[in-house]
Amino acid sequence: MTVVCSTALTFVPLSGQFLDRAREDPLEVDQLRPRRGHPLGPTVSEAERRAVIAARLPVHHPPRWRLLVTAVDAQAGEHVTFDRDSGVALVDAITASCALPGVWPAATVAGRRHVDGGIRSPTNADVAEGHHVIVILVPIPTTGHVGETLDRERAALESSDVHVIAAHDASLAAIGANALHPARRVVALDAGGTQAERELDALAAKWSAPTRYASERSMPSSRRAGMARPRQQPGRMDRCRV
Image (cartoon, rainbow, N blue to C red; front, top):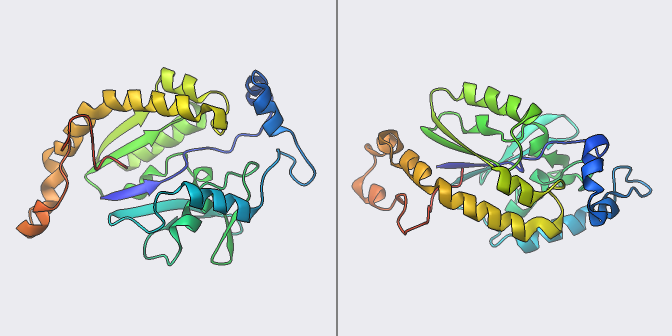
C-alpha cells in the first residue's frame, strides 16, 4: 500500500469573498492582519514552525508502508515527493508539505526551499497511479479549481478502482471559512469522525474487492497472513489511509 500525503489546500489570495467570510469571526481577521515583511498576514519563523510540526507528530520515523509526502520546490517550481528512501526526516518532509505560502514559511530541505504540495494539486492523487484501489480524501469543497483538478486526476487513474471521499456539508460547515483556524479543530474533527463512520461500509467494500488482493497471490503464505484485512474491529478500518 502506498499513502500519498498532501495538505489538500490550494493557494487562495486573502481578499474578496474569502476575507468577507473571514470577517464574520474577529479572531480570523486578527490572524490575517498584515505586518511588515508578511503582506498576507503574520507568520512564524521556519524553526518555530518545524518545532510545532515535530511536537504534533506521534512518531518521527517513516511507517512500514510506503508513504509519499508531496511538496513543491519553490526555487525550481517542480513537484517533489519524499519517501523513506529520500534521506529526508519525516518531520522535515511534513513541514515542507504544510508550508502554505502566505501563511507558513517555506521549509528548507536538503538546501532547497519547499512549499505546500497542494500548490501543485489539491489532492496529488495521480501520484498513486498503478495501484488497484485508490481512495482520495478531499477535506475541502470540490468546486472550481479543486473539482477540475480532481476530475483530471481521476481520468488519469481510469485503470484503477477510485473512491473519492469529499467533505459533506456538515463537515464543511464545521471547518468554517478559514480551514487553518485553530478554534475549528475540535468541531471539524468530530464532524469528520461522524462522516467517516458513514463511509466505512463503502470503503470496506473497495478494500475487499477481488482486485484488492490480486497482487498478493504470488506472495509467500507467511507474508499474506501478516497483511491487515478491512474491518478487523467493528467500526474501524486499519488500512484506509490513502
